[in-house]
Amino acid sequence: AQSVTQLGSHVSVSEGALVLLRCNYSSSVPPYLFWYVQYPNQGLQLLLKYTSAATLVKGINGFEAEFKKSETSFHLTKPSAHMSDAAEYFCAVRGSNYQLIWGAGTKLIIKP
Amino acid sequence: ETGVTQTPRHLVMGMTNKKSLKCEQHLGHNAMYWYKQSAKKPLELMFVYNFKEQTENNSVPSRFSPECPNSSHLFLHLHTLQPEDSALYLCASSQEVLADTGELFFGEGSRLTVL
Picture 1: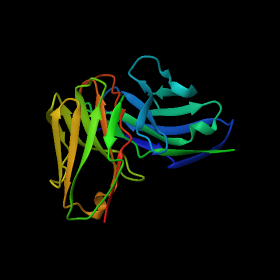
Picture 2: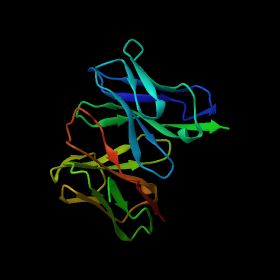
Picture 3: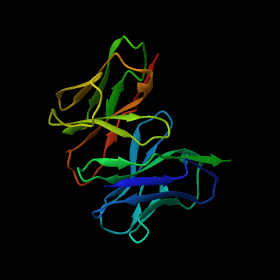
């Protein structure tokens, strides 16, 4: 069965610093992996996705994620945090019934 | 209007009330979903509709009753809810249920408080 673990319910970084949000997955089949972002008082929107092509995936707003099969990881990074990046980030893997299985989310806090 | 629209944005109800949540998508998608979002928990998939037909019901209590009259509209009828049902209810749509893209388009949610 597929599952997703996001390490850290809250991550705090200073503006301009590197953002690293961690996601580990479990999947019995080659995974399809996703990062979604939820800004305050809004629904979720797709940030980026891995669907078995390039292992380094670029998304919107300067975010990228690298698929590492040996580590079963799909960590999200951004070189320089901006105040507008403050949001909750969700990692997900596509399950055997094609529905998404979600992590519990990581709230990103940006310090001025 | 564009995207996925949910009404009402906020709802407070007693345990004996009957209310409904409404979702409308303007994207021409064929699949619609209800999710429950509670703090510090993964999103819980409740129901999936594909071309107006229900394809998933994840053991949701019968006090939640979905309705999908067409591919653009989805309702969640609520009755005799419990305080633990208080949560953000998110509606989403996608081009197809079994799409490889996995991209879901979400509404802003309906914040439900059960007293």
